[in-house]
Length: 477
Image (cartoon, rainbow, N blue to C red):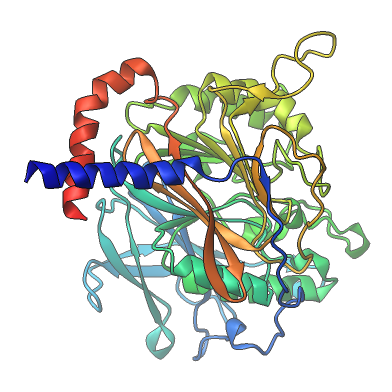
C-alpha cells in the first residue's frame, strides 16, 4: 500500500512540475481565423428579453460585504419600478426570507433607462447554495448562487478571469467557455459592454443588451467588477460629461465595507484570497483618495488568514504589446514598490486585446539619475497577467514588440479567459484558455506559489502538513 501511495505522490509531482515549467519567453505564432469582430445583431437570442410584463432582466450579483457573507442582487425592470424585494432560501421554490432594496433610473442623452434595482442580502451562511426570486407573479424569475467557504488560509476556491468582453460572437465564445470551467466567481478586469463605441440613444441600448448577454453567468456567479476606459462614457458632444455614469447606475460594489470612498476602488476577502480592485482612470497619485485608501488597505491584509493577495486593474503595468504600450507606467511608478513590499502574488489587468504573462520582475531601483534602467528579476514581485482578450469589437492586438523583453514569459494574440484555482495556502494552479474555432484550448499553465508562505521559514513550518495534503490528494485521484 505504501508503494502505491508513493507512486501516486510521485505522479502528482510530475504533473505539477510539468505545469510549473509552463512556456518560458515565448511569443506564440498561432494565428486564428476570427469570428467577425462586430457586435451580435440586436435580434439575436443572446439578447433575448425575458417574457412577461415587467419581467426582471439584466440580473447580476456581486459580493456584498468584506468577508463573503453577503450578496448584492441587481436587476432592471422596464415597464414600471415594481418591487425591489428579493425572496431567498436554501431550498428550491421555498423562499423563507426576503430583503428590500432600492430602485432608481437615469437618462443618458435622450435615452431613459429602465428601473435599476439593488438589494443587499446579508447574514448568509458560508459554503451554502441559496435560491432567490425577484419580480411579481407570472413574470417573476428564479436563480441561485453559492456562498464561498469561510475566510481561511487553506480554503480552496476557483476564480475565472475575464477582461474586455464586449458583445460579439467572440465574446459569446469566451462566456460559454468560462461557464464550462467550473470556476465559482469572475474577477473582471474592466471594459464591459463597449457601448461607448455607439452614439446617442444607442449607448444606453447597448448597455441593456450587454446586461442580458452576460446574465447567463452574472445571475448565478458573483462578478467582482473593475472599470476600464470604456466605462468612462465621457461624451461632451451629447452633453454627457459625468464619468462612469452608466456603470455606476447599473453596477454596484461593496466599497463601503472596505472603507473606500468610491465604488471604483475597493477590496473583498473571499475564501483564502484578499482581492484589491483599483481604478486606472481615477486619480491615484500621492494624496489622492485612491492612493490614501490603498495605502491603508494594504496594512489590513492578514496573510495568516488570507494568504493570497490579488490585485485587479484595467491598464497593465507591464505590457510588451504595441497597443497601449507604456500606458500603465504612471501607476507603476506610484504603486509598484508597495506591491513588492507587501508581496502581492498576482496582478490581473486587461486593456490590451491579447494575452501576456510575466515572470517575477520589478523596476523600482531606477530613480531617473541612478539604479537599474531596465526591469530585473525580483522574487518579491508579483506575476503580471494581461487578459484583455475577452472578444470585443475592436479586435485583437496582434503586434508585439520585438525582441520579447526578458520579463515576458508568454504572449499570444488570441481571445480567451483564465482560471486561478487556489488549492491551499501554498499554491494555486493557473490556466489560460484560448478560444480556438469555437473550442476551449488550454494553452498557458503554471503553478503559482504563494509569496507569503513561500519563505523558507514558513515552508519548514508547513512541510509535514503539505506532504500529507499531497498524499491525501493522490489517494483521492
